[in-house]
Length: 503
Length: 109
Ligand SMILES: Cc1cc2nc3c(=O)[nH]c(=O)nc-3n(C[C@H](O)[C@H](O)[C@H](O)COP(=O)(O)OP(=O)(O)OC[C@H]3O[C@@H](n4cnc5c(N)ncnc54)[C@H](O)[C@@H]3O)c2cc1C
Image (cartoon, rainbow over the protein chains, first blue to last red):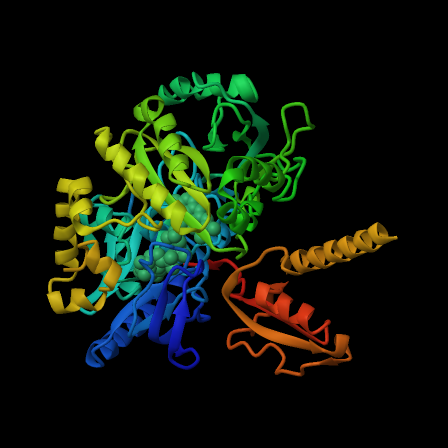
């Protein structure tokens, strides 16, 4: 039986403790040992459908859970049945005759939804392949990360959901196999998974980023690129204000030349102290992709620059001593930033997966962000830092870059995006300061979106305004997949209803 | 003479504050390639400077058949204050752990 009850009913708290599911009845979706992946996900989908029916009869809402990493509480629902998926985590190689004619199967892998991004990365690397982007950590489940449009800072790439080529989705009405209109997997393969094919570009683009409101995803087909190495450069540098113009214009080479190597970087990230962002050194991270070779100077994730957790340890101090915030934050940045290889250090290399880690729970964190058109960066960045610090924001401010991402509800909807993250210790003052940033952008008439997973306080009116026509298309796709409003309500929750995604 | 007394008192206070702060630090150990499930925790109380440790049930965790990924040991502010106020006779410590989701071999679709 792939679904088993876990423990007594009670409370479940998400990763950062931003939300609690009260009176939750918990179940676990477990991997089996079927010899073929298609059989295993077929069995799981049937079990999920049966479980949904039982929940419906019991009058309960359901909430599938990945790693529970979303502080926006899209993973929270009280008086509901929760489905933990992290032990549904097998990955399967796809053969040439599993796909439709003309589709290259060599980069594809069938992934059970609860596999962590780390697991997917490992299994791809085992086959000489790699993800081309992911978030700063890799402890999310693949389905959970895609559900909210998780992204990193690969400057020519979009979000993690861009890897998805097909989605298996279970609703009370059926088990769907969703692909773009051109199709990916063979009819025989889809039939063996017990799913009905839905080959439609809009439905696929909705299912790439479902925000947890379209049903339960047991499995995905994930695409990849040939395995590559990255050389990290990580340093503390005073960045001149003019550099914002280079970044806004996409001249990452010039930025890299000024602060790291005279090469085109593939990944650029800048973490600044918003208290005097151009007077105090910023933490810069560059990654330069290189072709894979077996005999590389392998380094640990720490040496490759994963994580900057000490920032969260200073949370209480930052809140207690507002007059010292700028200096304390700078100290935290200096201490916490994994001492990376600088330009003059001997180069180290790692694969994409080796440069990330699964993150460990420490202090209470605040995570919020705004995604803007990269071209607006020089105009608003200093204003944002100014308003944020004036209102007591106590986190570092991170700048990341990405191209337009796939999925109708992808927050990265500009052709070129700059994502400004406010990640650090949680406090009411910081949340208030972030709210002022949002007000500022509205006042300045700057278009922006917010992350589905973070504490960005979106509401239905704002979602409708931000996504316009694309939201209508997403809703039309949802209504095709779940025509009965009573069935849609099963996937509701206070947060998702408030976003206008479930009605 | 007086100032030596004050100096010693200040030193003792500084030692105490140092212990109070350091006690709240996080001790964290992890296996190399973790696949963590949810964090669970329990409070273990050392009594009489460790001569008697509270014998609670050891790591009862519902999903630990693949072992544990990591372990975190820390003391909260309140726990540290209890330890100081009781001269260390009662020393509550929080132990938190995450079970492993298991790593399955790559299969065929
Ligand atoms: C330490 C940390 C670092 C982070 N770094 C980044 C970053 O660099 N970039 C970035 O963009 N974001 C980042 N985030 C945000 C994170 O990537 C998102 O919160 C992501 O959605 C978490 O995935 P999860 O598996 O924990 O999903 P959850 O939080 O458990 O779930 C997210 C949503 O997906 C739904 N869901 C989960 N599994 C399924 C399923 N099988 N079927 C249907 N619905 C499902 C849930 O119901 C929920 O609505 C970070 C968060 C943390 C805590």
